[in-house]
Image 1 (tube, helix red, strand yellow):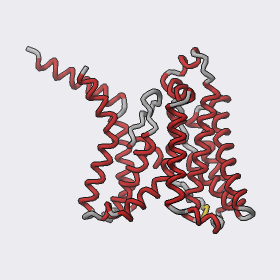
Image 2 (spheres, helix red, strand yellow):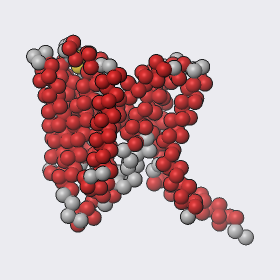
Image 3 (cartoon, rainbow, N blue to C red):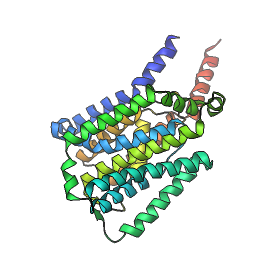
Image 4 (cartoon, one colour):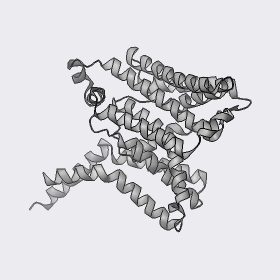
Length: 321
């Protein structure tokens, strides 16, 4: 029993240990540059949009589904903010949120109502979004209204992020909805027999995902000042890396924790920022992040656990007289 308890504790603290180790390594490697107040603030600001996008995908993946359209959704939402914001900034923000919610609803209906596999459905949505953006902003980027730049402050963004993440945590842990989401991810058949409206819950998860993606697009838009084809282009991969580093179980279910997108997003940007300060090239950074993602996925896969079990069994059999 003690062994199982220790394993559970280690699994729980593993993402935090990884973050602490990274902070220490880069503190030594950059001779303290990474620990300056200015740099810590930069890392926090950079990770905010990723936290929201990851939190949205977190709800979807906890039910056992996948979302590969997050980059395209963010790009479309940012474009909506820029173009409609030219007419009226407030209307631009409203329509940006509506666009995100509608794209989330679209994904939810396609995957949950029409029963198209989420991998294929969201991949198609991503290509649709990319095609639309190529048509509208291929020649030049759309400018975000100057009046919205005033919101690009740490004092505005930090409370916004905290409020949204607290609401997400409350929804996931304190409301029946969160219990239903975890149960669907653990055993969808059992959830059906428990009279849980599985289709409705799945659709709502995609809608939440779309709404949080829209807010992430707002943060990206006011920070970059433009909506271009490259807006959010690496977001999908970063979301996967963030959830992996945060200890998210890719099968979803009861073991999923809302802390995964938060700690994972911060760890991702601590890694990127530290490598940047150490002079690592962008190509090498992509290789390192990709290798790290692949390695963690393998180490947490059933195949690796079966392999370690076989090795342990073999050692025990060899040690017996």
